[in-house]
Image (cartoon, rainbow, N blue to C red; front, side, top):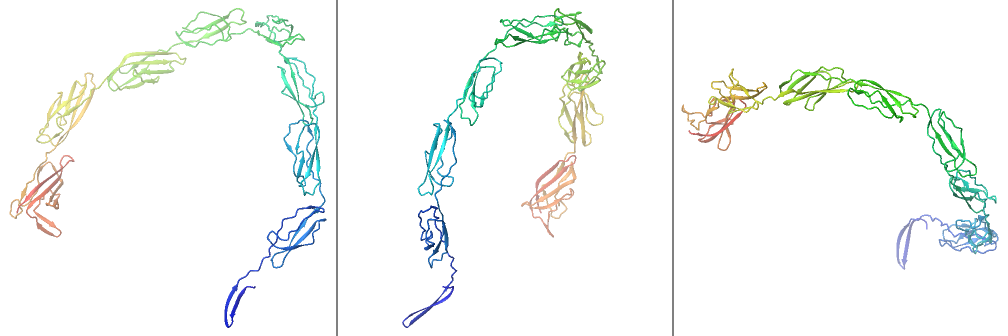
Length: 626
């Protein structure tokens, strides 16, 4: 049916009913039948064309089956199956002869990888071989037959594998040789087989060699042992060195009885290497001998100098070349001297001179500008020496100073010190001069004291001083007012009548050697704080006791004053910073003023002392009675 809306009418006798339905249909897509391809057949073989596709579509084929020629067949689906026609080609041909890759020829008994002949020919024909595996034994021709599988349109075929017989490689034996003789191994066997020998030729010891034929010759390997006889080394007594112009004779027979000749001819003027060649027919090695011809040698020596006067030295008994001899004149370590070396006889050596330089030693001279003093003591040392390249001062306390001029040094510890000056000249000669206890440093006394009090007022003016100095024998006290002085060890001093203020006390302690130290302390003379605060006042309007305030007579700073009143609940009800203002018993509250009721009130005074920055706070209570 075509897409659209359809009305259905149903009736049963006189009863009729209708209904409508909408059909949404898409056009049909024809199916394409598929079939299993029929394999090629041999001429006259049989095959069938299926009446149904793999999808189950039925139909028929045209033209009729023909097994004599390759044909294109067309499948036409039966009506009403919504399917298309398809075509299949069936190939018909004569039997083929399978072909394969040829194996061999091989060499008999070669070690080859296992070879199994392929089951499929180059043309794709499957089948089996008899025998199926290739072998290299025995020698000759082995025929393998290939039989195609049943149904294959192919003929049987054969493959002939050839195994060639190996040729045995033989060689003429090389006779034994003497060590070092030339060996030549043939590159081809007596049968004409080419190949290589291993290992490399060795003409120093007996060796087994292996012959490996070149590829493709189907021949056996071979071995050959070449005996190498060790050559005997003839022994000779070494001829000693001769002086130029002397003579020597080379022996024609070795110590062990082997004869031969030497070359080159004897040369008595220069050192020469000679070679001994044994007579022919003996397995004897050549030998060499070097005969040294020595020219007259001028001995050389390591000079023991230069030295400093008085330094001990020796002259060597042998030169640097090992020549022995004697020296003249006798050793002199006080002045520069030239000595002559005379070699002992038979050493081909000449006499030789040797000069040993003897250098002078500098003399160290110095002087201090002071020999003693108090700690710390600075001393200037003057160097009065000359001709020195290096000067080293030792201050006797482990301190060393490198300086050839005037040296200044400050001693920081008491005691006596040995001072040394070591001078070293350009030639390396040195001398040390030491002055024992040259500098003596006296420790200064330590001035210390304590006072019975450091604060005075108009009621307390006497101070007792205790001297705690160490090392002092003489004392002088300055008490800080006018010119008051005392030499007592532990003085007392009365500051009565002095003004308020600070007084610097000085103790000067000195030792018998005149060393001085000072100690200081400050005595403070201040006004005593004097005040009175009543405990009751009566602000009742009469002329007596109308205000409450502290009464200060001395010792406070009026510019740093604060007076506060609190009620029983801790509320501040009056305050002033004017020391002349008291509380009149009134309470200011906002814009109104009211009289404080009778009762107990707390007061607080906060003041600064007059002569220092110390502050004092006083708290108490006052009774208000009306």
